[in-house]
Amino acid sequence: MVSYLATILIIMVIYILLAFSLDLQYGFTGLINFGLVGFFGVGAYTSALVTMNLGLPAWLSFPAAMLVAGLLSWPLGRIALRLRDDYLAIVTLGFSEIIRLVIVKEDWLTHGVQGISGIPRLWPNWSSSASELFLLCALITAAALTTLVMRRITQSPYGRTIQAIRDDEVAVIALGKDPSIFKTQVLVIGGAIAGLAGAFYAHYITYIVPDQFVPITTFYIWMAIIMGGVARLLGSISGAVLLVFLLEGTRFLRGYIPGVTDAGMASFQLGVIGVLLILFMRWRPQGLFGKRSAT
Image 1 (cartoon, rainbow, N blue to C red):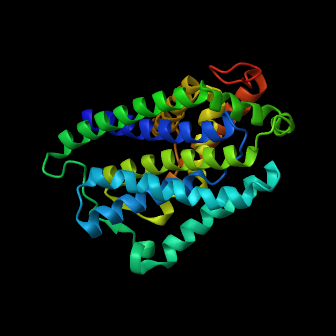
Image 2: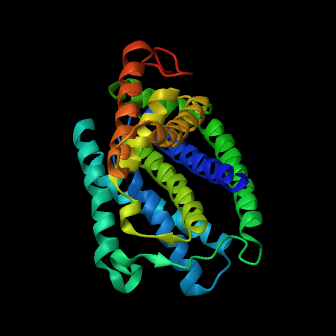
């Protein structure tokens, strides 16, 4: 039971980090990113490869995961930010799929569809339960530090600028500022946070394959920030917590629904979350902790 609760909490905090990443990009800056899972996957693979190929301690690979995921966001920003919001969404989605296909095809490095197994835990010499608990503590610490950084960013003059870009980009240009610079920086910061989440995920799961990094994960995070409230740090946290409770809670319904297969249960989970999302959009579009006009 303790191991199960630790697993739930670990996945929950990883989703919180991903929600922070997306909320900075969309909630505070207005960038529609449908490719978040690509940077999540880059962080996971980078951390795993650095640890296993270079023989470094697992925790030393985390800066590399953040750096590579952030750097990959830069060219995407320079190319895509010339496009309108709807085209940016398509480009980011396509970019994440390109990353996944590269992971599949470059099997000399990533082992392709077979994935990477035997990824060391953060504390490989400890027992499995102790390692899980300390990884959870490390994750909570990372999430707390990320919260402080996000708070510092969003409440600073820089944060007010990116929110002004979200609300009226033409007015920002009229004031002599270049929105593309700020947008690219936000994409890089968000990519680095997603890479950090991916590094934690790799060293917790200890086995990663390309099929773990599919677009449905991105849309889960979109659901989380919408249900919690965009442009609100507490909204990102509460939305991720609610999402994980929904995903896990619906698993227990299988015993009460006769004749439902595993595939059918997965569809049922998506249906429940979809209905809840529709209800949120109808009755509380600002989310649990958002305001009707995000500022």
